[in-house]
Each structure stands twice: as C-alpha cells, then as structure tokens.
Length: 143
Length: 112
Image (cartoon, rainbow over all chains, first blue to last red; front, side, top):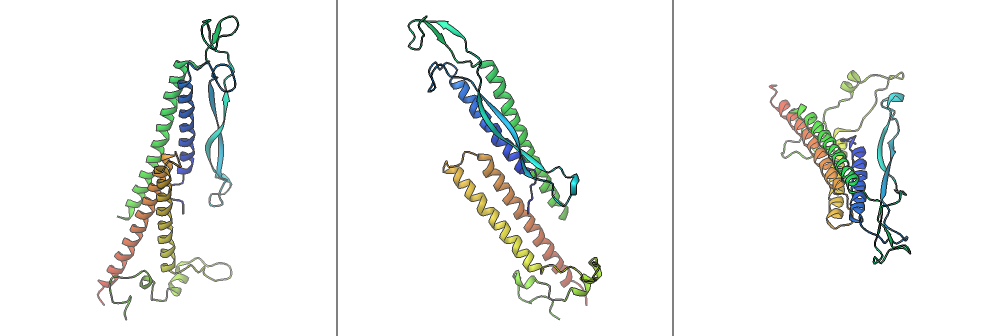
C-alpha cells in the first residue's frame, strides 16, 4: 500500500539539497582557511547529483509508465581553480616568496548557491505538502 | 435472522458478512473463460491486514522520529514524511470503518 506515491522521489531530493546546503556551509566556513589536511589552502567543494530509479514501469500502466526516479548525491568534487594570492611574508602559510594562497571560495557565488539550494528545498517541501493535501482531499470524497 | 451478532460494540471478526455472498459475487464479478469468479478474502481478513499495515506505519514513523531525536539520523524530513504517511493511512482506515458502520446502520434501519 503506497498512499503517497511521489513522496519517495521528493524525499531523495530533500536529502540531496540538504547535502548541498551542508557543502555550501562548509565552503563558506572555510572561505579564509589557508591550511588543509591535504596541504595548501582549502579547495571549494561542489556537489553533483544523479538520478536514481525507485521503481521501473509497473505492470498496472504498461509500457507507457516511465517509472519513478529520484535524485541522489553522485559525489562531491573539488573545484581545481587556483585561489587568489596576496603578499604577507609574516603569514605562517606563506611560500618562499612570501605569497599566501587563499581558498578559491567566492562568497558571492556561495550565497547564490545557498539561495538556489534553499529555494530548491522549499520547492520540494511544497511538493510533499501538496501530495499530502491531494490525498486528504481524496479521502474527503467519502464524506 | 440476526445479520450480525446482536451485541455491540461490533468486533472486527463479527463484521464478516454472515450472508453467503457467493451468488452476488457471481452476479457482479466478470467471469473468466473457465466460468469461475475470482475469490477474494473475507472483508474481515482484508480489514485486519489494513489495520496491521496502519500499525506498522505508525511504528516505522515513531522509530524514525526517535532516531532523529536521538541524533542518529539527520534527515528531519524523513520523520515528518513518515508521520504524514502514518496519519494518512490512519485516516483511510477510519474512512473505511465509517463506511462499514454506515452500511450496517443503514441495514438495521431497513423496515422488514
């Protein structure tokens, strides 16, 4: 018995967007981190999504049913672009020439990503809310 | 003829149709090539399955909510979605029960 059919797709999307928000938070938090475990400054992380099949076409609808797919996080990749540098010989992470490399995190980009991720999360929440409302309204037929 | 056990409240078991529905089923059910109508389970069995399904959903929802509250699961939405599913299946069950009770009362009001 599957009452809220589309909800599993929505659940996966909410999960993925939450991961994206986590990664954006990590990027913003490390915007000025000049030292990381793998050496050098922090490198910006980017989340990639992929679609995931929940169920293939069911026999009830025949071959016309496209099935149901949700989204999941395919992986988190590192943005390889070099970060800005500035001269500060007294900095503990300065190189031989006294240059310090900052992370390649651009706060403006991160804020835009943050807004799109939170809007996407909101959109999926609305889908969940609507599918529940549809089911409740359907039950009202019997009243 | 006592339609249903005369004592109320009616238990799920006693909601089983005491009348032989086979002729009626034969009338409404589409006959296969062999002429045998498909036989379904008794209403009581189906309703019992439904009740246990609702119970299972409620248990799942409370387990997920517990794991979220204990910090084992960061996915708050899963807990809320599970609760909504549980509440929805409960509403469906209540709706089915209302219809059954309504039908029973309608029968009892029937002048013989």
